[in-house]
Length: 588
Image 1 (cartoon, rainbow, N blue to C red):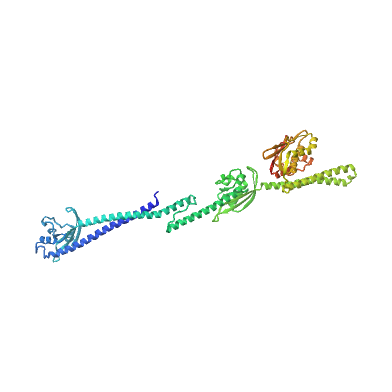
Image 2 (cartoon, rainbow, N blue to C red; image 1 turned 60 degrees about the vertical axis):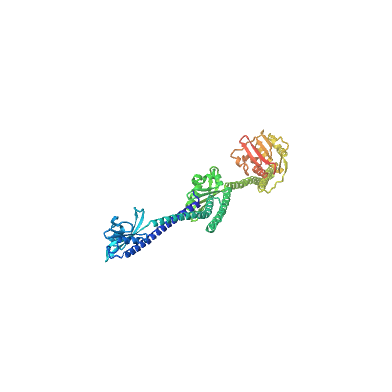
């Protein structure tokens, strides 16, 4: 592609060339025509003067005609010829009349003799002389009758030479003007083209999203204003793009980190945007959703129905839906249409809030209330029943009185333990009990637990195996760690048949300590494992109550472990035994 200044210069020179060429040709032609007209007038006047000089009454009178013509021609450069009315040459200043052919058919003579005009002018090339001649003829009238013609001719050789010289001069002038115009045109075109080309380069960069591009040149006039406008536009574009990018990043960050799913669907049902939470809910990469129909992605009849209804009715919709694949989710779906600048529907926005945990907690709360009521009802009913029995007269029987009071006391203790466990668990969950951090030797805590459960272990002929390590230190609260291990070991004793084995192991790792409580008890089924740490959840309800358990022990253990920034894991095979693993960090 040619540079802009080359094209401007070429166009300018082409225009100037044709303008100068046309002007030169017109000027040369005009000068030639003007000169010929002057010569024509001159020849006509010369012919009239010669006719008056002949002083003839007729062509046959006076001094011999040939001599007169020769004398008259000596004073000028013109050739004089006298012709009879039949075209015969009577006299000629440069040739012998008798040897000359008939001139009746010469154009200038014919105009007078045949056409009757007052003068005749013609110009033609002479093969004999080798140059053009101009002829002017006027009639010789005697008594108003045309008796002949006086013709005066003039060589145009000098005119041709003058015209040729003029053309040569014009050519030189044209070449000089073209050369000067070229130099001036190049300078002017470069002065115009350079800033324009710089602006084009900046425009191309702006088109390619390089908003740092600027026009460095500072031309004057309108080009300067245009360059300044482009720089202002570039700065404005850069500022706007940065603002848009910042907004996009903010929006992208918000959408990416939202726990609620966001789905943007256009009016044709094509997905425009889906955030990470939606991908988690549908079990696939949300980036692959863009451009697909919502029915290909949303494989749920309830949500598809809500999207279709929102697109058709263009109203806000809020409903609760349930997903079953790939995981079970309970979602609060809020759908709303969005419109463009013209007010027409552009699509819908669907916001999906995960309320699975809320519903689970509501269910747990409901079950907790029912469980608390049930757990409280049993000892209260026992106390109430035995009290009424005693009041009805059984208190007179000393054995019965002692038996019933013993039961009332046991149920009161059970009720007291239940209430204490509920209050303790509530305080732990609300973080009202602060840790009193100290260095704890976990082996010492295990030994204390072993002493506490020693009688129960011996009663059931169980084998309790303790860790070999004598010192395993962690930062934590000693009483809480004791309560954790005691709960797990007590459960193991309760649910391990006679003759079974219970082992407590310690693993001292680089930054953590593992406490492992393993038994060969009845084990836990796989369906019960996920709910094992829920409040009041019992695997074997009848046996749990017989052992005096409240159903809150493992829930308390879980919260105590979490208060130490640790975690608890359980692995069990029904009928074979259970392994509880507690992982505590060494440093709090």
